Amino acid sequence: MKVLRQFLIIMIISLLGEILNRILPFPVPASVYGLVLMLTALMTGLIRVPQVKEASVILIELMPVMFIPAAVGLMTAWDKLRPVVVPVIVITFVTTLLVMVVTGIVTEKVIEKTEKGAEK
Image (cartoon, rainbow, N blue to C red; front, side, top):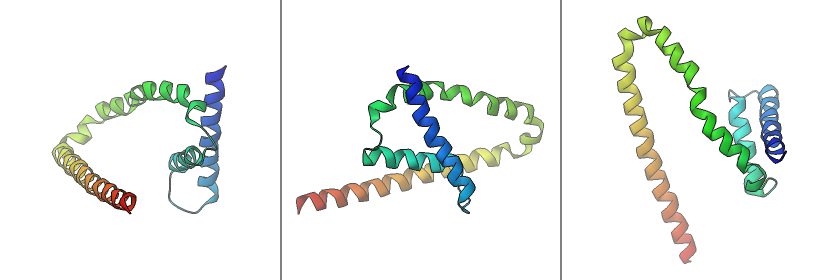
């Protein structure tokens, strides 16, 4: 029963994200609204981690299963993808590397700023 209540909390947050997606005129996916709402609720203490932890663990464990339809779709579209597979792999590699570098730099700056603020 506890896990069902936790799933209900997560689903309500997701529903609120869907509602925001319909109401607000921004090109932001409903899932992003839901994630921002969940983050805000967790940071403000409106929702505490133990209130959603078990359901979250289950969802994370099931996540790889969600990639199976995408992989099957890629396999069925292989004839169309074959001519562009090398550029797609290069673009994926370069952009992933770029995101990792930028994230690392931003993280270092935030840590430095936090440490300087703590020293004062």
